[in-house]
Length: 293
Length: 293
Image (cartoon, rainbow over all chains, first blue to last red; front, side, top):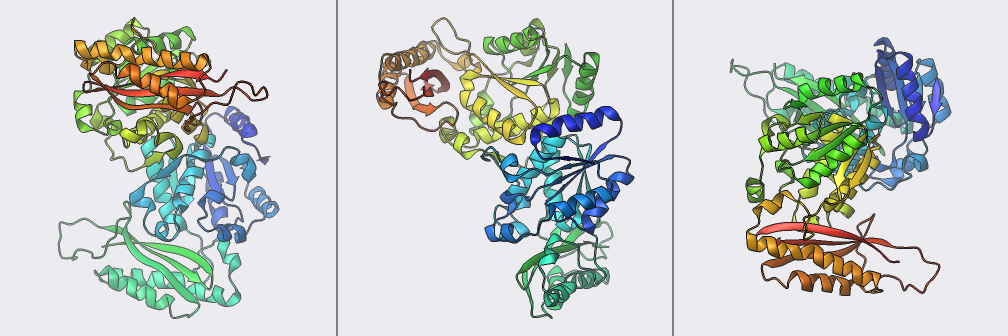
């Protein structure tokens, strides 16, 4: 496994890979480090697909709206590299902040309809920072395929839109969320949970499943579905809700009411039931894909 | 000369060129059409450098803040293609508006320190539109080198910054402004000038040269230099000034005073004396590079 820490070394290293097996696709996964089973599932997907597996590990300060959140975000490069090796990653790019931001970022990107909803409301500038780093990484790696986890569904959609608008020849693939036994989505932030908060966090996915069940059983009023989710999450007093929202899957536009099932001609509406919850002080997000039929 | 009008045909056509001579660099020039000697000089530079010469012709509605300005902007594709052929262009990409914007643009880009000064003040959204189209074209063509004329100096600087921040492996080269006998910079908009306005427009470059002369002769107060320029332009009553400005060459930050020449230790300051002038109703821009020593 090749480990690279500077931009200038990265390009020739990638070129070498491409020369070695010109037909073998380059599959890229961008991470903030503190790798867990969610990342492992992406790495294994890259390897299984027969591609070169390239990974970036970079805790991007630009995407943290709260400086304290950045400071306490867990990181452990040595452990991360071990895990990459174990998962047959071929190349890791782990630059320092100084290396990656040697030039002050002046460029700003947004997709207001996608960046200013859901997590974008509470975390001002977060997705602008994500777009910036991902655009740079994609331009650097120019992979054939890039993987993004569905836990960060909004991020996945934003990246899809960005890549499609730029017309970059990169396939963006979403990867299923990996969960603990009680359904809690794997996240680096889980490490920040106290045992009691960890227990409370287990309610998040349970609530989403109950919300989806209500839809599947015929509930068309999505504000009532959100109510169900909200009540279950708040049944533990350590939980505080940032948002519970239902949005159209592609556009992330709010969706509050499904059309009656009896209207035969209508198509299936695919939507997302998404939440952000503070468990004590740790903000966790999750979502579940739903459809109107 | 290959003429291509759809995005889906463009990629394989570029791949063919690259395969034919893998070492031959691809040199790209983006244009709005209505080609003139300024463009010809870029095409000839591309050919002389030994590269493939690729050109886009697309009147990008997104960069026109004034819909009427877009409507009256001259265009003549047939003539443009003739001129490309004459200048040994290898590939022309001339998509329709519908083809290029088949997807509604949602993504927004800015570099406030560069896009919100000079022409960005009077033409809100103009450079955002330029960045959008150029980013897309560069991602599509992925040329080794892209040429931008110095008449649109601000545009050139913005593109440099954008490409550098994304880390795209593309060399951005500026090309000297080509001028008529009386110094007027070639521009598609010159076609919109009445004979009288055409005469008045001749004052623009003359005023810039006089401004630069004042600097070369020792004037350190750049507001006085701007005054000289302003007076010469306004000596014809058909001219109206949008702006006369002096800005630091790289950052485009305002520069109003040069340090005294006697201070030996100081470095040379390179700056731009830039103007936008309405000759009757036609807005023309021009600039001249100056330095403090």
